[in-house]
Image (cartoon, rainbow, N blue to C red; front, top):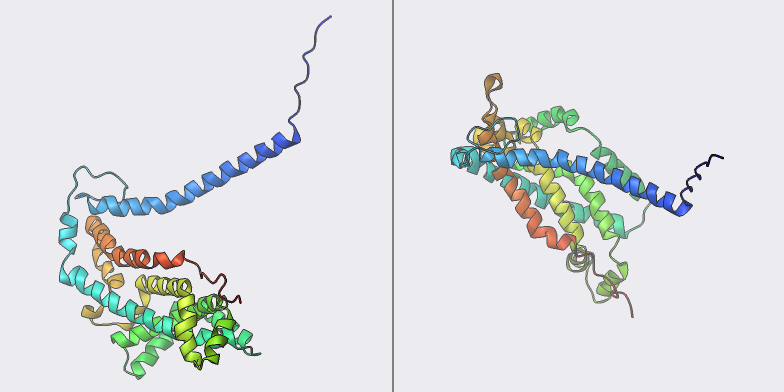
Length: 291
């Protein structure tokens, strides 16, 4: 009589679930690696090409490391003046945005009104408007009020374009500060403005840091607005002057472009490093309203 092999035992439900969980985790890890590679390859090209005397479009290790690309771009008319213009424009616009967002978010967070929700929905709608759709009327308005080709006019438009989303962010962070702390200050004779400055804003330091970084980064990388509103070459920020590395007929100085990109990214990285301590600190309000 021929012996038939015994059927292999089926996987238990627990092992089957573990196998599916492992497969999903591996698929998620593979997807994250693909996304990470998509971000890492451009950064690797910038760093390697800035040190390569024969840089091209390919990501490759330079045959010889040189700083000639940095020597070529670290000049007042190429890098230092545009970076100073960018710091003036973005720093002024960020400061104006944070101040106005705090003043606008405070009544929306602390006072209840039927107009709060329609107002918030209106400013949320303004964030969805493409910047190219409003630049033509803005340009005509700036010509009429003599703000075209002025740093202060560009700062005002930078702040106005970032203010709607900044108000949303600021209000959400401000809602996390207990109102009882302000009521105690009001009992001691503090005004609403004093309680905002001395109590609310210090307690929502991480929120202020988020709004500051977000506003500064969005302004720092904006090309279209200063390109349209500024006409004098000496006032152009670095986001516009980087276009000078793209020559005619497809000729591009890739090494100098990469070196300029490294220098151009440094202020944003430094800003994040300086403020990152407050991003992870939380509100630290535990026990503040007990008693």
